[in-house]
Image (tube, rainbow, N blue to C red; front, side, top):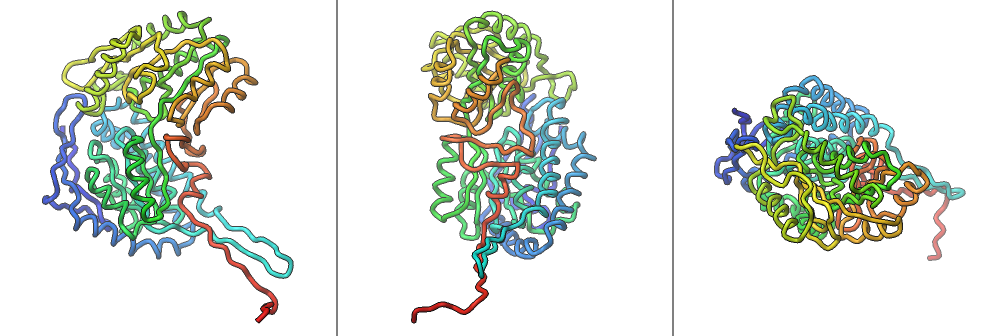
Length: 483
């Protein structure tokens, strides 16, 4: 099984290789097989990427927004035409089931490109009357942006970051995760085919040192990171040293609250989506499932029945519903959390063991009787491990749900919509759902509060994070000077 790209990097409109960089082996998570070998970006590659981005950005920003939008729209069309081929590449890179990647990953990326293609021409300034004089404002590009991706949604993230950056006249140098480096290279190819001028979207591979070199370069105006809280803290500090704009989309330990009047089947289905989709490797997952005591046992019984029926296996088989974790490192981390939960006294309802042999699989796992202080209720597992907690009253569950450093997402299931809005209003989270979970249309802003990040991706809110305002005072009379 071969997914070898033409070269490791894409710089100034073409593939670039420099074998002096450290080796990166790309492994298929379902078998552990090496399917591609790449090299980290050397200082020469990093310099070429930043220099080409700086050179190309000014002319791109000077184009009419509708012309920039046409390029992004053509890229979206290409992605949709090649959906099956791109989904297969995403499955090889991440281990996600093909039934997910064909509908969720690249399609969401295409949606983002299409959305921002349409938004760019409508993004305007304002006039501020001052009597005789007036002020007008202009929304300008920031310049060169750096995007740093995560391994769980690598191609979607590359699109989510590049779409607003490019639509509003910026250039981007993108560093994917070294675990999943393939999709961003394909996106760079597609952009050139769609008519994007060379240099505006560059892809460089590497680990933390490459990211560090990018975020501290004087030519970089903005850094957008998707990753863990510890990584975000380091990147945020490095970016702040140069007064750079930042968007930080970090981790979470999000609450999903199920009141006893909720539709049981819907709530169980949402809890499974919020913990088992993409083998649980989703930052916004509702991994603390608070269930009101009146329906707790019925909820757990139905949850176990449906979880045990999940089909695990070859991610390229369309019947497979859950694939492996992305790496052996992640497998070991998740299994350690499972063992720790058992040791701390949580009740194992289902799962708890490795899945099919030969890959990095973990069974869909549910723990009940989880206490707030247990490690499983406090730390982000990033695997298919659900913690179910009991609660009695609304005030109690809101206080417990908010008692965390994180604030990425939250969900509420109830038939009482007045209560639903009241509870959502009290929860400290940036992205919330009522009687739904983990739906993230590109029209809606996405991001967190507290340690889960700053800024927003997608929606009209992204305009604020990829442009800056210039105010222009226009004097229409003599200057009134006391000198």
